[in-house]
Length: 118
Image (cartoon, rainbow, N blue to C red):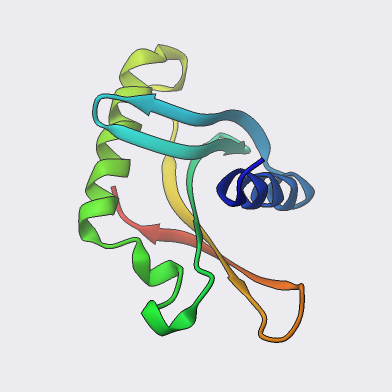
C-alpha cells in the first residue's frame, strides 16, 4: 500500500466514524477522479483527500486549487449523469486535508465541509 492509499484509507475510516455511508472510492472518468463518494442523509458528498508531508509548500487544503476543483466538479457531473438514481440529490464538495504533526508519527486531519461550490 502506498502513502496515498494509506491516507485515503485513513480518511474513509474517519468519514465512516462520522456517520457517512461510503458509496464509492476512486471514481475515474475522462473528466477526472474523485477520491471518495459518500452519502450523508440524502446529500451526496464528493471528497478530495490531500496529504502534504511538508508545510513549506503550502497546506494540504490549499493544494485543492481552482483547476483541481473544476476537475472534481466535472467528474461529479459525469458521476451523476451515469447514475440516474442520484440525479436529484443535493451535493457538496469536501476536502480532507492530512498533514503530519512535526516530531511525531501522528497526523492532523482537517475536514473542510462544503470546501468549494459546484
